[in-house]
Image (cartoon, rainbow, N blue to C red; front, side, top):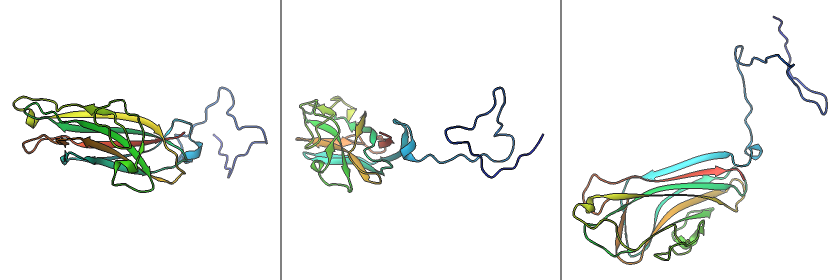
Amino acid sequence: MSTLTLKELSAPTGEVIKIASGKTLDLNSQGTLILPTVPSAKMPSGSVLQVVQHHINSKLTVTSTTAKVIEVSLTTKMANSKILCMISASVGNFTTYTDDDLGLALGYKVGSSGSSSTDYSAVHGSPYSIEVVAGLGNFFGADTHGGGSNGDQYWVEEKSYSKLFTISAAASSVVYVSLWAAVGAGTYHIGGPQSGSGAGAETTITLMEVSP
C-alpha cells in the first residue's frame, strides 16, 4: 500500500474528481473524516433548519376574555422561511352542562412579543363561527364545555393542532409564535381540570423552521 500526501485536490475547470469504476474510496478505516458545514442557504427546499420547543405545566384560567396560552420564539436562518408549528393543550371539563364558548388560534409576530392577539398575524382562517379570536380567527371553536357529569371536573381533554405557514421576514429575524384562547362569557381552564390538585397535562408548542 502506498501513501500519497496532498494538501489539496483540484480538478480542471469543468471537470469533477471521480473514483475509478470498481474502486472504493475508504474514508472510515484511517484517520478522521471532517465533513463540511452546509450553510442554511444551500440546504434543499423543505429541509429542517432548526427546531425549538417550549412547554409549561401550570393551569391557566381564562374568564370572559382573550388570553395568550403559550409562546415560543426562534431566530430565522433564512429569509421568508416556512414555519411548522405544532401545539398540544388540554381543556378542563365541568361537572354539569355549562354553555361557555371557547376559541383557539395561532398567530405570529416578528421582532417582539405582543400583549394582544391583534398584535399578531393570522396563520389560518376562521372556519368556525363560534368564538373567533380577534385578529387571528380560530382553528377550534366550542359552543359548550365537554363532560357534564359527576367526576368530569377532574378530567382534561387534550387538543392538538399543526400548521405549516410562510412568514415574510428577513434572515436573523426573531419570530414569536403563540397560542391564544378566547372565552366570550364564562370560564375555561387550560392545562388543568376545573377541580382537584395534582392533575393536568403539559401545554407544548414546537416550531420547525423549514427552508423555502
